Image (tube, rainbow, N blue to C red; front, top):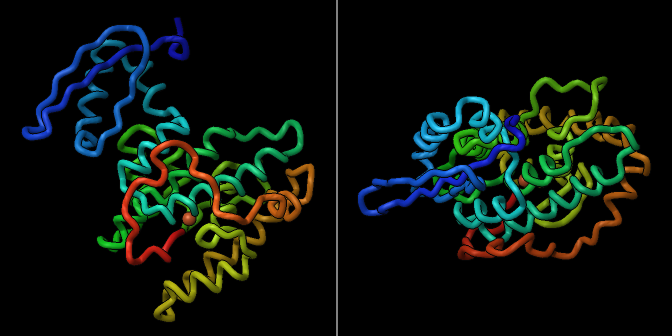
Length: 265
Ligand SMILES: [Fe+2]
């Protein structure tokens, strides 16, 4: 029996007041538990799983992709502002307009694209208070709870690393590009998005230049993506309605409206 067809049931019970927990375990179905107050316990859970079923299964768990429902739960758990939820859903829709119109034979993991698009701003809301770099902290968070490949996309959605315009199409390129085509929840041109970013964040010349330098790679990524698509990339994206996107699943619109609600994306 290989790692792909083994599963287990891990029931974890938390006492919030003390932070103590206990668990029951049996081979059956895997239950993944996402709650803010136990995030720091995930490494302990990993130890428990390793103890019972070994490293191989544990590795397959730690490298999996969250489902749509898990993404929605995480968005609610991290109190993502409604406008940032809407932005993220629109980024997902642009990402899927690309992914669902690729030439046959182009291998892209659709589930990974969906999860990374929905979660790319997972720590954005709290960053409005903490001033943390939400790309870095979002990646760290997702890596810590076991979504490693999604974390790698999230942590590069602001500053892309090791761009290879000659290589095969990568999920991180799709999500990075889609994010640059969505301003708040509206689909815009690259030029409009650059202008928006410079206006919002380019308060000093150094940052302004950094934004412009970073955005200068977008046309190259756009051409690369387009070359892998069976229809024109602009046509595919234009087919998406620019109206406010529907909530992905339950829980998407939880959370209060923040006074700084314009700062999505
Ligand atoms: Fe974004």
